[in-house]
Length: 365
Ligand SMILES: *Cc1c(COP(=O)(O)O)cnc(C)c1O
Image (cartoon, rainbow, N blue to C red; front, side, top):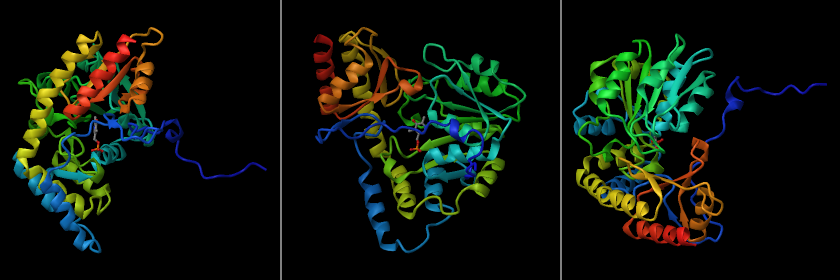
């Protein structure tokens, strides 16, 4: 007798479950955890206070419109509040977009070393992932355009990209939009937008405001230091906001998340401090690591991609093991097709110095 068991939809079992950055070491020592691009400054004290205050009404359902949070975001960036949709992390928003716009027979494009959540969201909806090669570890607009077919429904673009840390100028993003037909949704993932200090960079707000087929997603997990609370938002064309609001969970953000997120985005000083910290330590690390003879991909985000040689004893895997033995966790990125690299989040001053000292020892040995 053949066993008859519940079967998931085609595509689901092709998904390799997302493996988060490691956070524990076998020895039990408190590690320097530089594996998930979290901020070394922690959350704003105002966000923590708002979170704590929300503990007095946990029996109540949250505001299903996340009004306080959406208003705070709209005010901060001068946006139309009706076009802001919040999610339990931007991961949820990426999934909702895929749920709404992708199905079997459809194709969605992302780049060679693009964020792996896109692939998962595409496959989960029975659609076909199409990978566009990058040039020098950066998005290649022409390569994306060359992979468009009449089945293409969505293009996912992280700008800056994780795990490479590279970006493309807004002019290139506009060229991409202009080259895609109007029925293709362009999703601009700006998870690291706040960190970028480049005159030719924009996260895409204006593009969203002036087209009806571009969405920008943002997160509170990175610069705002609220990864544990799961808060993201999307700025959408009216019709897309309407679609996402129809399919999202009616209470997809918790009250503590709404309160803490609103307080965080109002605390501009805390954000500025995080940007300044990054401006100090990102170039310092680039310089120090390069002086050790390691190649580093120039980054505009709060992390760095470090390249290791293929020589036995000197590889990325060897470095990873060595650093772990010293209580330091970076991110192995072989699942992103970057087996010769480790990704390092910019940490506290002490953590950054620790990594450089440990890698100096590793390189010398
Ligand atoms: C970290 C990250 C996110 C954020 O995910 P959340 O679900 O909001 O925590 C989104 N996109 C990219 C590229 C990221 O690196």
